[in-house]
Length: 117
Image 1 (cartoon, rainbow, N blue to C red):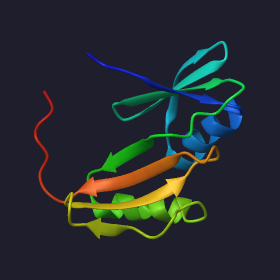
Image 2: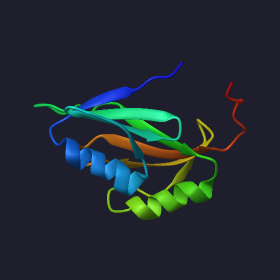
Image 3: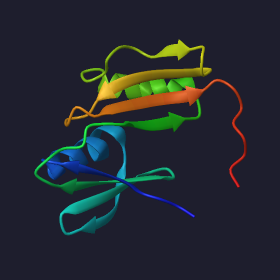
Image 4: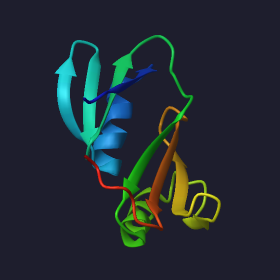
């Protein structure tokens, strides 16, 4: 099983460019009025509409702190602050804003994760 999360956006090209050029996602499928991106095993799409969905959080997780730090260096102009440890969830993270004002999180888990099956 798999899934895709979709967001409405008033500027599909700008949203897609941000995630492709700044985050490193790749286009998985182009449709009329919608672009579906893939980043690892996460698939998410942006559909051009008259309103923008800016709720929720798109979270990208990495294997180690160094990769989170590297993403911070790429996105420091739109980050809300530098990466820090969140003891409640045992993660290292930072938040940023995408061009639509949507919250984007970049994190790594500080403990071993369960194996994917």
